Image 1: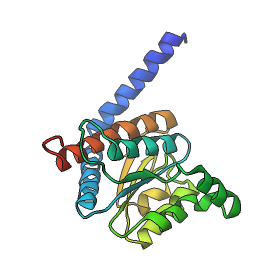
Image 2: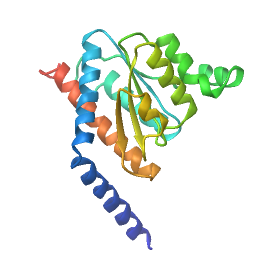
Image 3: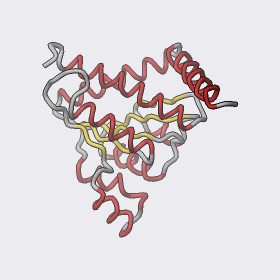
Image 4: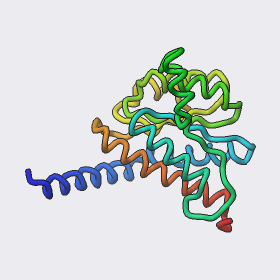
Length: 196
């Protein structure tokens, strides 16, 4: 296959996955419920904390920035944070304790009852993400998970699971950002209906 054919194939594959998700009432309903859960937390003074590994860490940071900075509107900042951005913390805990604990320990320091943990894991089985979700469950922090395949173990630890029906990591992550953007848009438009 030539390179132009490869690109066309990727775009067609992504388009088909978008259509599949758009026709799934469960996927759409879960995405709306996720947005509503975040809105409710913000209205009660809560915050949204994100975690992920690799590309999912980048997605976590990306979505946190959309909420804490801005999406479409110039408006008041919302408290959203990706838990991996302090590299001194991350490397110290990974070295001195375990990489498995890097997110649960941050959540212990920063999370409060009524907050939201948004956990991104394409497999749904990343140990450090599972430990964070486990801590959240005990601390009455709601868990919204973005996964792929069958949702892995994370699915059953989540209040809401957005499970992309694919085995392809790249396509899963692309859909995480697409749905994540839609959720950010709902949150922003609901909390700031006048755009301010």
